[in-house]
Image (cartoon, rainbow, N blue to C red; front, top):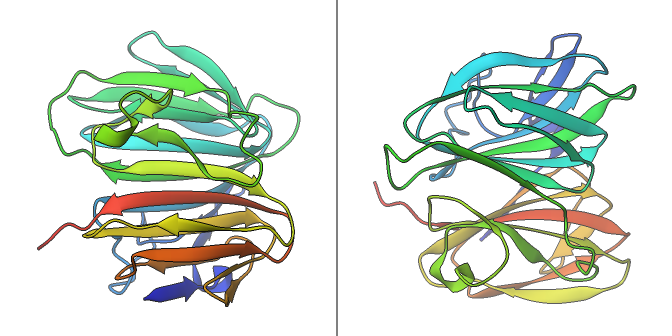
Length: 237
């Protein structure tokens, strides 16, 4: 099954300083048909205006992956961590027993990012935060950026407390590749830029794409594309 969710149908909110689009129900946006794909609960497509941002607020028992598409974000938390993550790079916060943090755009330009929340499989861990540069050898392939999967335990990725992995890559027009999907797993992916086809089905920039019940699928770039993909376990009710 390949389900394409057009960007124009996403939930949205314009707070002036923040222009947000929600792939799943979030904050004041609620759609009973879009309650997340556990353990993936949130995929927000945010534009944060220059000189603004999210003030200190709490989280717990959540893996929060932030992929910066344009601009930069500056993180601060009550553990004493401070760091700036720039376009193309990624940060991970494991909220664990509880953490207070802020995310501010201290740049002179707008910042555009994906914020992805994946529910932790282990509660009560020690909170932590890390940031990492996006590997430059990512052209025409998807590489793992954050993972809690055993198969990535010896790979240089940011770790999360879930049997999931977030991949990204830059795919040139007319290039294609096959992504293998293990049993009892599903994928949610977004082309941040460009246009792609998944098994021949077309998707535009910022559309959501949910894939399940397949053993593999082919991704073809109709235009130069930047792809972010979450490989997830299927959580049974």
